[in-house]
Image (cartoon, rainbow, N blue to C red):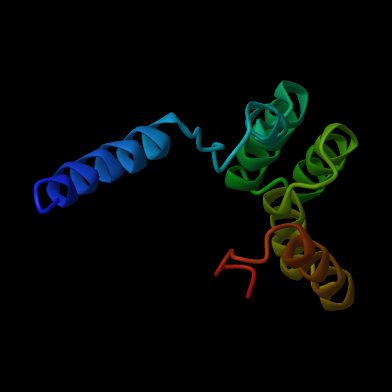
Length: 114
């Protein structure tokens, strides 16, 4: 009877190991979420044009490009943040603050927005 306990212990261990390996873990991020997280090519194009205009000091043209970018991706905190920076440069703080709140809504972990 003493010989049966080690055998039962080994069988129990192997059963648990087999069941543990057989279970399938769900991925933390689904493929659909990854696809949705990719930026719209049109939004990215307009955003980059806005960045170029900003670097050239053409704030009104940059703002126009950022606004076009928002038509393709209205959930990008980066676009709202860029707009806010331009509005601050144009001395429109109320508009800038409103845009920063919107940026924070969509990108709450972005330290620059805070």
